[in-house]
Figure 1: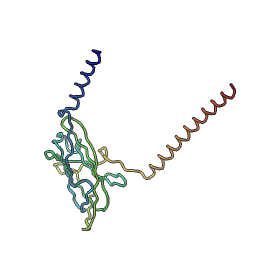
Figure 2: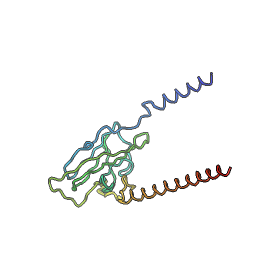
Figure 3: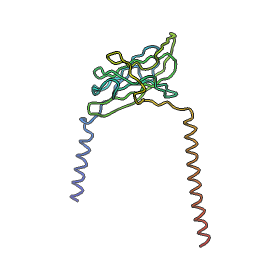
Length: 194
């Protein structure tokens, strides 16, 4: 009985300290544009407002915002964000009407990495055009980040991905069913022989 009491005290102490507010991670409070909102094409400022300031990291590393096409997952340009107090900001240039995902990653002061995404819809009633579609990532010296030197926050969805997954899954199911059938047949033959 005493062993149970000591164990219960240790467990209760661990749970109390492991979920204390001191161990909480930085939370995303609000976004601009708002999730599922419709915005006009152009240079769109993206702002993510956090509970606390994200960790100070070099531009283009750790604290990132990217834009991707919702239907294909294709990321448009590099991922980057500037830290302004408790906000992460960037500007994206979009001209094609449609749905887009804003993807983000943030590192809090305790080193915890949080990430997420939300969707916006773009309309183009002003015939906006631009040669540089996507995230506009220029550092303080005016140098553009190279998207090919970054790990993308979004991966392009290949049109045949679903077909190949279905073929592989179907093959696995057929093989497992065949294997189970062989085992059941051998058991049945053993019972008849006995």
